[in-house]
Amino acid sequence: MTSTTEKAVVHPHPQRWAVLGVLCLSVMVVVLDNTVLNVAIPSISTGLGASTADIQWMINAYSLALAGLLLTTGAWSDRFGRKRALLAGLALFGAGSAVAAYAGSSEALIAARGFMGVGAAMLMPGTLAVLMQLFDEKERPKAIGIWAAVTSLGFAAGPVIGGALIKHFWWGSVFLINVPVAILAVAAVAALVPESKDPTVRKPDVLGSILSIIGMVSIVYAVIEVPEHGFGSLEFGVPVALGLVTMTGFALWERHTAEPMLDLGFFQDRRFTGAVASGVLAAFGMAGSLFLLTQHLQGVLGYSPLEAGLRVAPMAIALLVTSNTLGQLVLKLGASKAMLLGMTIVAAGVVLLSIGTTYPPTLAGLILIGVGVGVAQPVAVNALMGSIPPERAGIASGLSSTLTELGSSFGIAVLGALLSARFAASLPDGVPSRSLSEALHSGADITVVRDAFSNGMSVSLLFGALAVFLGGVVASVLLRRA
Image (cartoon, rainbow, N blue to C red; front, side):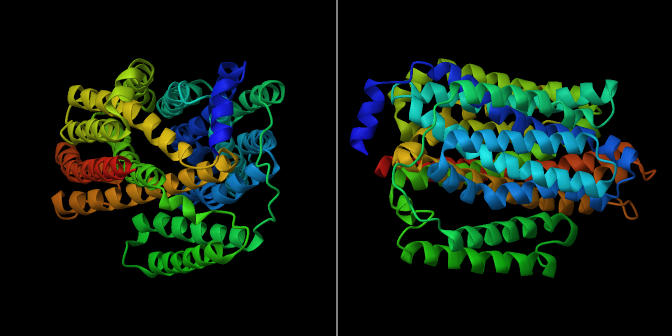
């Protein structure tokens, strides 16, 4: 491992910055799709006559495919080549997007979204794995910072782009826009990205792949059912039990098989464990918080989807500026202190969101979140990828993405459940509380409904801020001990 790292320092890839642009373009199309869809839901519902259950499955089919396959596709990219994985993932994602754009029924769109999730799962681990192969230790934090900033920029730009497309075109345009971007990315990957893979020929871990897919799909499905049925329901309990049992079986199999898909010895490295733990808790707090914030901006502050998207954009701008200007400060602080500082700033930003009954404190909170992520995320990714052999970068990236996806799902479910309970308790008797939209259109006093939602959101966001701060503490302690 040491000799491989030293060689990378002496011979950095001559086209590495151009390749980084291609990798950012590849991951951008995936991130954009997630947030663009949220804006298009009302138009899709009208255009296809989709029920609430149909809409949920349009979202969930993608999440289930992505979370279920990331571990396996990460291992495949190491074995068969990361460039091949990127090309296949982009092709599948682009094809799925084309089918989704012209879907004539809810069932066809749900199937296309699942297909897009498969493509996203194939390409995502490869982007970070290739990045780690091309940049030396000196340039890697800056490259990771750009990669992270582009990811967040995609998140913030999604509602803006989606709102503009829906305003001028039909709902399928939010999917069709992915096709030319995917074609461009395929051409750029084919021309610029060098092939890399694990030089050790490993026997495919078929049973490990099957167990990981069943386990992760079951757990994510259980979390998806929480908003509708609650944590105490069979709809949550049965799949989560199946998932936990299956993932326990997966861990036991990986520990004893001769050629495991996932080397559990990675977790013995405190840098790896600290980075993973911080990522899960940060995703829990941030995904849940930003999910609630989008509802608040539109339902309480009265912004249109396009206006709401524009008002979230400062977070991505702050992240982009921070990741490209504070690199030397982060190096001087060291990984442990930088992680604690970054995650504390993010937590402070989420606290400001909790008191944002008007936009100015919300703006300040978004800027703080962007700054904090700009400090912490490059450190976390560098610690994660620097703690494992470069030839296993794909599976490590897949594991990190899987756990982050799981943290995001739990964050949305848990913070959403806290909000729903508080929202219902704060509403007058007889006012429906299943959703903010339903309550606003029930004939009740709009001010009372909005105050009830803001009250519930404040409690939920404080819980999310605590999760983010704890993630920083855990990561800081483990990184310092390492």
